[in-house]
Structures are given as C-alpha cells and as structure tokens.
Image (cartoon, rainbow, N blue to C red):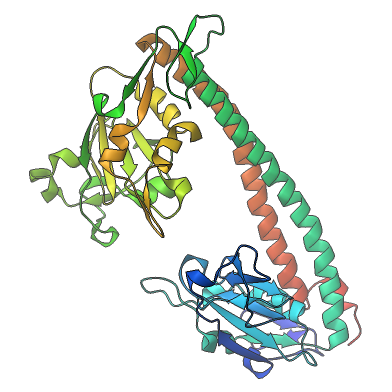
Length: 421
C-alpha cells in the first residue's frame, strides 16, 4: 500500500493510481420536462434526484449515472441502464466505457458521499464542475469487475437484511395503527351496546360516546410569524413546523425535548400563540399529502410558556377533555383522511383553520378517555421499542454497507489486495 495523496481515498495498493473524474466522463445537467409530457403509459422513465418519478414518450439519455443536484435530494445517486429522460434537477454522468465501468464508478460515488461537496446556501446544490473535480481511484477493467462482483454480492446480502427489518417495521406500524383505531373508535369493552355514528369512516361507536365537530372542541389561533433564522439560544421556547414534521410527532415534553427560543418581546402582543399543557400545534403546510394533519400536543411544558412557531395552528381544548386520547385519535390515518381530502396545493399542501374546524372528533366519557390513553401507552410502548431497535439496526447496517463499499473501491479489503493488477 502507498499514500494516494487524496484525503478521502487514503492509502491504495501500489499499482493503483488516481485521477479526476472529468477526464473519463462527460457531465451535464438533465433537461426540463413539462407536466404535459408525463404519460403513465409512456415507454421511458422520467428520472430526477429521487429516482423514477413518472413516465413519458421521449428519452434524452441511456447508460449513465444520475446525481440529484439540488435541494433535499442533492447527492442522491442512481445507476441508469436503459433509455430514460433525466430532468433538470439532476446531473448525468456518462463514462468512457473503454476505461471505467459504469457500475464501478457508481460504487465510487457511493463511497465518496457527494454531500461533502454540496454548496450550502438556501438549499444544497451540486454542480457538474464539482463532480468532475472529484479524485477517484483508477484501476484496470479486470480489477474493476472483481470489485463489482464482490460488492454486488455483499451489498445484496446487507440489503436483504435491511429490507427484512424495514418490512417488519412497516407491519408493526400498521398493527400499531389498527390497535389505536380500534381503541379510539370502539373502546376497550367489546360487549357494550353500539350505535351508528352516522359517519362512514367511524362506523359504529359505543352508545355513551358522542361525535362533534372540532370547532366545538377547540379554540383556534395562529402561531408566530417567525423564520427559523430568527430563533435564538435564549428567550421563550418555540416549536416550529419543521420539528413537528420530523422530530416531535406525538407529544412535546420539555423535560425530555429541547427547543430553540423566540424573542421575549412576543410575550407583549402574541399571547394567543402561546401553548401550554394539553394544547395542540398543527402544521399549516406540508410538502406531501401524508404529512397533512401532522401535529403535536404539549404533554409537559415544564411550567414554561411555549410559542407555536411559523406555519402552525394552535388548537386549545375547550372544557375537560383528555388531550392524550385526542393525540392518539389524531394519529390515525382514518381521522387524518378528513384533512387529506380537503387540503389544497400542488408542491405544498395547505391546511387551514377552516379545514381543521370541520373535522369530526369522537368523544368518549372522560373516564374512558383516560382508560384508552393508558391502554394505548402500554401497547404502543411495547411496539415502539421493537421498531426503534430495528431502526437502530438498519442505521448500523447502512453504515456497514457504506464502509464495505469504501474499503473495496479504495483497495483496502482483502479480496482486492489479492487481485493481481
């Protein structure tokens, strides 16, 4: 082994060399395609930073590597082996086949982690120039193929385990949903008399339960108009909509969770944006339909005022109602379907106070609300512990896969070291 002189590669076998990717590849941006050009029965896949996002009847590339070049999908890598249309939010990398194998380069870029060269501005961006200047290991075609064979087999084994864990988690989440839905719509006693709720998605409910519109259960207000950049390291705790979508998806407990802060000046004139124990904060926008209805309730404010941040709606319960029971109800796909069927938008879906006010809520007697939330706490905790353990295993497996790829394409694994150049 010898030093390669390239930081990310480190040591390589003595017979290996390095060079810049641009000397072996043509790198270009994809091309714009209008919505009118999409055709569900089209012959060619439309490829963006997230992979296939539709089909059309024209192609602009084949046998290339596609790299997401902008936004959240920046740095995503896809190997394309048939005619396709690559959109303008991705880069195309076409290799010189007599010098480097497409699949080998794909594995190199996987090992490199393109996020390290992404420009960090309003949103991540990778340029063709940056990709072209990446130093890569160069070896003969025979050795490339040996590495490909090794990685195809090894990554397939790892991916099969990851897929099994992901499938298990999907089933556990579906099972969790069914347990919650059954409890919040039918109760815990299977022998109580039932009545028709008059609402299709609910069906029959116990005789002593009620169904009311949300406008009679909550008082609604808006969160602060404040950007993430305006949040501080001290002041009044403030939860923004991004944290609700990605971090605190059920309850907010300030003895467990940490938030950034809003300026204390808002206390003087934005009292309606303050939330306390039992209050809900809904996101008023979502980038996908599945996120419509995402919310969190304050289970423990730690005796502090908390501000609901930008793009949020505050829902403050009126009267005596168990917010944890409501949080379980709001987590069901059946309840959220009311919102998803009413939101509007294309790239961003908007959830208004009017939409929330029109949703139907099932109200058991107070004692049953507590019994249901206690029951679900126990059942869901057991399921969530298994899901969490699987998620940790998946993270470790992905890290292991990344290390296997890196060690192979930089010549550090034993199988590569025993290959004759």
